[in-house]
Length: 75
Image 1 (cartoon, one colour):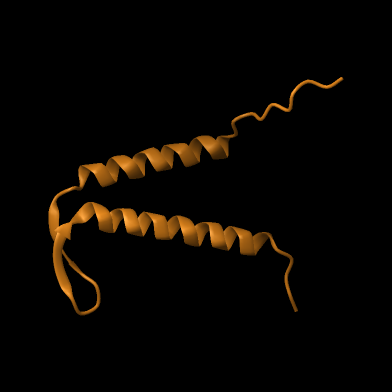
Image 2 (cartoon, one colour; image 1 turned 120 degrees about the vertical axis):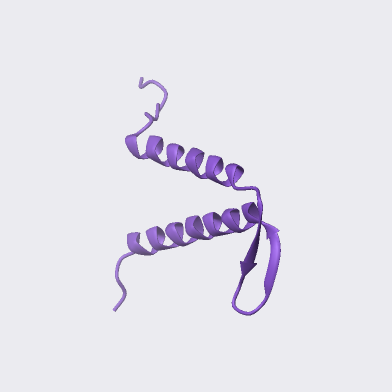
């Protein structure tokens, strides 16, 4: 009989967790109001939603590229 399937924490997991913690700290430290310009309109808003949106967009794009890279090439 084999024991339960134990998953060890990898170096990759630790690095990912540290990056998430650093991103959260960075976002929380930058809660001040600023002028944000997106093409033409300018809005005066807190900086943290823009940082959070940019971080989430980066995660989504990174996951999409990783999934695409793992698929076999199509000809």
